[in-house]
Image (cartoon, rainbow, N blue to C red; front, side):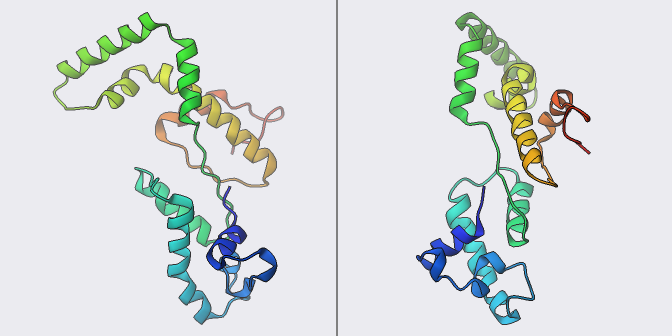
Length: 182
């Protein structure tokens, strides 16, 4: 969860009691509070703060996600960047697949790559042929994360990758027992 007050504290290197909020990132999206000159002067600093403290070197390979993140934060929207921790995914897969299964998957993927006329990476081929194995835990995790987020918020705009959209719809529990997915 990204907190703009925390970004203001990081930029000012001060506690929340000593920050001038009228000149900070927390009030960037409120034109009535900030002067136009302060707002315009703060925009490059806001972009720099997001780049330094939120993204660091973890740029999304999907350009749209990066754009959505910046635009949402520079508006007054709350943002949750959610993904299943890689170590958790590996633990789940390690506990659910036998060594023989992994060997068979590996052989099959190598055969498909050698037959393919289009060059593809091992990762892409594995996801393409075995998404039901390797994406299932992520789909379940993201569905649960989205449910918890929507239970805590009145409104939520979620951006979900195409491979995850259909499975997440299947796992979603519609009203009256679940949350309104519309």
